[in-house]
Image (cartoon, rainbow, N blue to C red; front, side, top):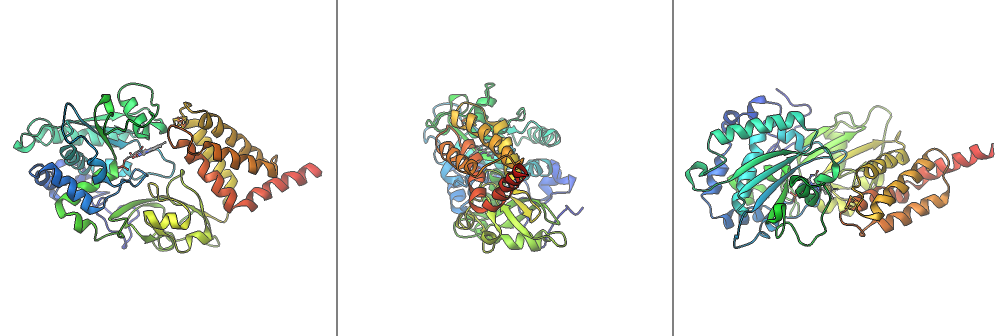
Length: 430
Ligand SMILES: Cc1cc2nc3c(=O)[nH]c(=O)nc-3n(C[C@H](O)[C@H](O)[C@H](O)COP(=O)(O)O)c2cc1C
Ligand code: SF4
């Protein structure tokens, strides 16, 4: 069955098997070579597994792009008690819908990646923390976990190696903030999903007070392929600093939105016009948010030479984040879009930090005022000032994430703001 939409320029490593229900089963996954990497990894010294992942250059796909092998090496050298791996499957960033597909089409790929990672960091227990709304995905994953337990791939003495790893699927209750790694651990422990102050970092004091590594679903799904084929093989895709393939979640005003697995460094314009079929007749590019709602917006000129890798997107004026590319044509009301994003952050703020709790609400109110034609030019300065106070001053970066699209949209689409403000002035004068 063809999976909508596919494109010939895709390099399907993680998304291989999507659309085919057989890959959801243990038998189907094994038919694609599944669990061979686990067998190999369990017989490798754990340091070698970490070195292979370091050699691959794999960077975390949850947003920050931190090198995965380096993160794993932060775990204690000498184990003094239980250690944990948390797989972050909370995927709630507006515009992001890749982890859900990995969970529902290739659950064994994720289980295999989790088990290899757990071996590498000496974790006794893996927790896959799933977004509360992922009903179908969680059912598919839970069935796959049962199958893997029955086949001796999880639990005691895995594949006769003497290694014990347990795995639990945990459903959240649908809060965006529980995707932040320390809030996730609090939620897992049965507490309110509030981010913790760092340090201590999770590798020292994590879930249940024990050393813990947190990785994104897509990050862990890449691991079996790296172990199986080697870090150098993985580096054949992508760029020097951003190796491998990436799942790009494309949404917005293009003819063929969807998930596409492409090598990092792929040109943004090729993604828009070739892979996604461009715009509807008569429409043109106005703006792109390249990495999910938390990153600065790019205008059409900035998209011109932008390549989709961690460095390329920064050079263009934004961040790759989790590569959720939101594309907007010339009919887009930028102020309205930004206001809707800020509404989201205001709703999802956990309320611990004053700049975030109050700032997101103020921003939303000011933006709504401008949108409704009741704004002034000073409101833009107030928004920028508020954004400054919300950035770098809070426990987690949700606050920074809310401020970034506001500041960048004022800098790059000032005329859109002015048009609404002046329309209001004209209405007032009439
Ligand atoms: C507000 C907020 C929400 C987040 N949501 C997610 C999420 O849904 N999934 C995810 O993998 N990472 C999310 N992150 C990033 C995680 O804190 C963490 O960095 C990531 O899971 C680490 O995995 P990686 O190293 O594999 O990228 C979020 C961060 C913040 C501040
Ligand atoms: S920045 Fe916002 S979401 Fe993050 S801890 Fe502070 S109040 Fe909570």
